Length: 336
Image (tube, rainbow, N blue to C red; front, top):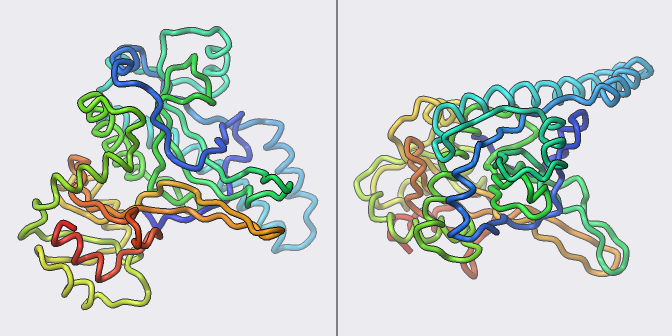
């Protein structure tokens, strides 16, 4: 898992990847519909390249005369191909490892899934990747940063298409960095736990944010006398490690780097680690000026189980960026 920010799409060469004009996470399936959703064969949609677009990108590379421009165009192509390859491998590995909601699982390409959607089949649930975007036009005709987006995993009945999605989850990932096995693994664990709770509580539109808040209130006391860990990149640059540690009174706080966080997730270590999770794209305008930014809540999560231990970041007066601060560390410690 990595620092989460807005990013430009890396999927320029994929085949009809969905870009959802979504500003918050979606949980449309009703509690009594999940038995059907989970009882179907699951199709995990694999990404694929569009040969025509790849040819255009290669043509652009060959035409660039400046070395810097040629290198930039080549990197764009390489990044796209690497993302597709890594996503397909890591998602397949992660689904095999932890996904047990659907007994039967198949892997199909985007074009294969597209053909099945046209058949109006009701035999499948699809797990697919999209990019939730701030792309929209306001009443004055001004557009909101159309290239700001969040990596999103969707889990939905195939006949619902890519518009009315049963369930979506904003990943705590950064598209400007390589997609990792850790990203896939922890995301699927969080999704599984959330879906189980949706069925249990039976609430309408019970989003991941709602679930995380309820879990934080229920589980916060579990931090007592524990050593918890945090990636240094999520500490606000206006504070110090000493300030953060002195304000975490429930137990011991230890700072680690991104590679160690990923390793803990991949090895399924029984440790609690702090994460920011995106929950919306806030957009607005004032006359000709437009603005958009991704908002976050922050949690401590047991990376072995995917259990959320604490929650903070969406109450009035809270910061809603991805950074933990000393005052918030005290709030996590005192279950506030």
